[in-house]
Image 1 (cartoon, one colour):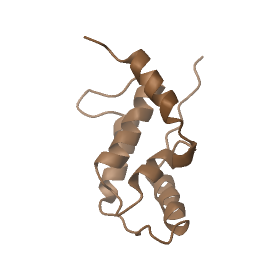
Image 2 (cartoon, helix red, strand yellow; image 1 turned 90 degrees about the vertical axis):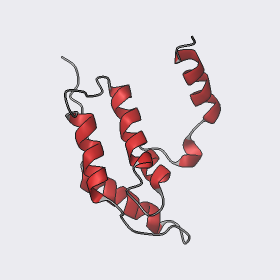
Image 3 (tube, rainbow, N blue to C red; image 1 turned 135 degrees about the horizontal axis):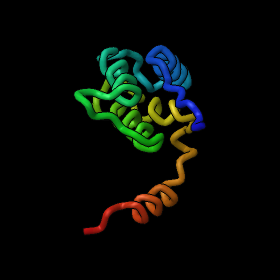
Image 4 (cartoon, rainbow, N blue to C red; image 1 turned 60 degrees about the vertical axis):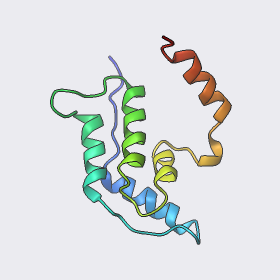
Length: 108
């Protein structure tokens, strides 16, 4: 039996963002679109219009993408998306990510 995926709730993501705001004197607080956060969580957990990411990796990428691209927060979008996965921006190994993407990108 596969492990059950536990999806973050929108309230948890709001809390992570509040932590990011409190950690920096230059990060503006504010939520532009609470619905965008809910929609991101719903998309990765249930999907929309018969389409949903299938693997844990697809779900993770889409959640991060939606938390950044839909601009739900006034500031700290990328840091919040990373923190949702237990990472800080400084903890991301860019070379490792680039190597992974190069190895797993369809080269036509």
